[in-house]
Image (cartoon, rainbow, N blue to C red):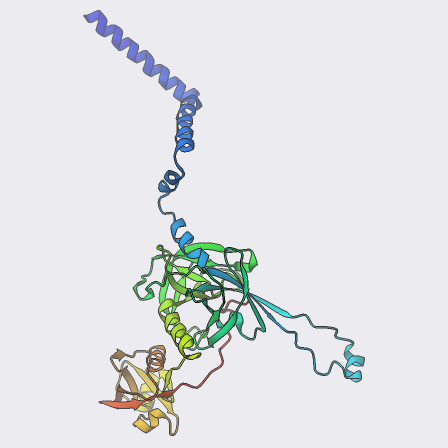
Length: 388
């Protein structure tokens, strides 16, 4: 019995020694068998299994949203110099020849089976012709239903059947750190999907639009992506890609998208009325600072100070004066100028709303009947707005 156990121990020792030598000197002999087994299992596995073993893949979201994202090509007739036929002009400056039409590139999102497409105003602004190219390669002309320069949004309409429609998400539920995808046609190379996270919410005071409440993302956005979709991991639309901060013209990891909550309101107004109607009270608001508070003798630490009131405007008729600090509009608290602009814009013209304000050391409330906001021209910030 002793000899049997001794023989067994010696055999195990020799085998372990042999394994150690092979593993040290010829490890590929062992890895070859393992890799062969891995190749066979992958080759023989169904296609669905290969997707199942890709944790963290966003392919399902991209597949769901991509068909509803379109490429937009615009053209604008060349503007010939009105003096080009003047002999003296031609003598000094020569024959200018025929000017080439200006072309532009952007993206859009199909939001309705009726053919409505959301995009940026700066993508289609001034265009004489607009052509939309779907992800399935169909080409169709589009017409502008309406634009809203204050938010840099526009609504187009195409006449096509069987249109893919994106699902609208809830941008108010987004949180910093959520994964998102940016889908568009950067530089005209074709539809492209990039990924990133929500870097910040409620970005404003960037000087890009009148009304700013941007979603900031590090998903790569480049020229041509304007008007494209920012979607969540479920493939639902969360924003319309609008601008980037860039010193080179390309993505630097700071992109901005208009929340779908804002885009939806603009879409509904334009489809219903052909334009966006906003409230207006006729004041010049400023951020409350210790210097302004001291200048106007107001004892307030929060709110928006009014430094000017339009004569005979809605605010003046309601009794608002320069130096008043507005702290609330209806049920909404107001802490900065952007919040005041947004709250007032949401008022229905001709309807009274209760304004909470502070005058000196006194708190009071006034009913203000808002008017209709006048049309404004969009502000241009080349270093921040994506140039097409």
